Length: 211
Image (cartoon, rainbow, N blue to C red; front, top):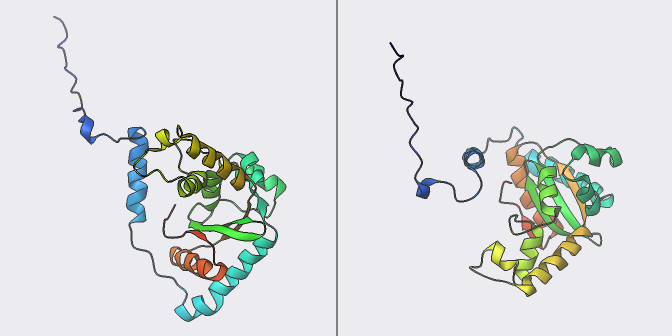
């Protein structure tokens, strides 16, 4: 007597309209989970408001200004290729991955500032050579110089004026310097982002996006 045939139940296929439009499904799920986490309420600071205003924020600003006096060239970040260990070989003071505030400097003056819960990874992403699949600072500068509303990134790179602006922006970014200050605590990080913008008067700011 032959063994009974056991039919395998197949999982229902996800309709095409419900599938993620970019990246694979696993990446999309990870992104969705991270976005859900970022929607959670910010835990209140254990520090009192007078302490934050009078002591914590000025102390962190002094620490950032010290880092701005001895910044790391963007070229060293690019050569490290997103490897913090490689960066630490030349700059022992570089800590491991952390929350913090970063400032991109041009000719000793702040040109761009932002906050991130993975600050070194964020800087690596900003400084890497951009293409039509990545959204970086070079893309933003090119969009400012050659605005093409309604045109996707892939098509923009086929516009000669935009591609030229993008290449100029990347050369400009490669000549920047980077200063980073670690900041623990979500509330402290958001407050310092606004404090940094007001204190340094940076022309370009990326504060209210938790990257």
